[in-house]
Length: 365
Ligand code: KG4
Ligand code: ZN
Image 1: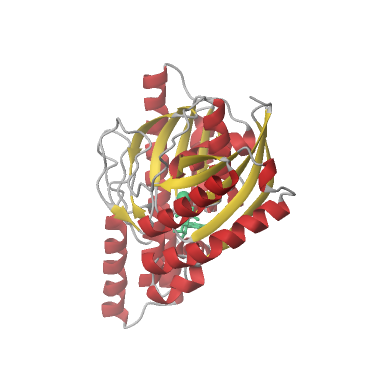
Image 2: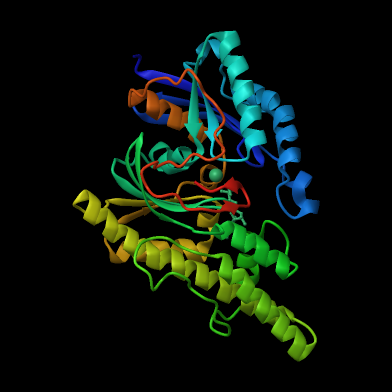
């Protein structure tokens, strides 16, 4: 195998059509291009991602994003060693659009095709951006996912726990809607909370009294709704300061749950691997939240573990992480799967018991 691998990555599992060209030289990454075409404005009037609209938009934009990524990456198909496409988990229409497009491209050009698990892409991002060594602890926290993983190798993941209902980003988005704040809800709530008092209201921290690393966030928005309605009944309105205080309390509740469960995940890592992790990597859109980031960082500092958060553009959905995961799988000598197929449900760790539920971004995994 040559020392250098150049991979074309494609991503279409939710509401971003993305393509990227990434080079792996002796396990060091060079991101030659990373193109992301978002669809947020197509879905905004519906208050969530509409799968059929998403699938059609992916089918239209895959070709364009792919051409852009190759051009910006100074590459032609002749330079590409493999095409890595997200095959799951996610919305079936978008996955099918991506997989069919990639199959056509691979068949027409004779390039090897690999079906990549989207969550593996997120979990391996910290190796692409920071060169982390295995094993490390990873927290994926986004609009569709929330799980703690031990990343043992490029192809071995142990899921320590995950949300049993909403993902935190989904809770941020739904709560922002209840307060008439803009979308995406995470940044809107974070901005409003700056002027707020996190102690005026107290929102629940579910499952903290239970052993293990599973989490729950769906009760938070119900509690927020009750608080909003009570204020409305008492005062006839929900004022700007009320909204700020509600947002600060909400954000604090999410942050507390993620942080307390991070302490548990670190202890479980030690129990399973025999030593504490050297690194704790957070990824996903919610990891952009400064209060949550600070709280996770403090937890790592207390445990003498290095906290790593990839740059935001690689924390959120992108195709560079998919290309990189493809390179990692090739390095790990994973057999090429000749039958790449779309898998809307695809747990990264097939041995851990499944957690039921659907999120804003489709099936949880
Ligand atoms: O990773 P991402 O771009 O897409 C997936 O869900 O896969 O994450 C988007 C989610 C949205 O729910 C958004 O509200 C949330 O991340 N988010 C935030 C912040 N920025 C984005 N949540 C809290 N605070 C933020 N600053
Ligand atoms: Zn994602």
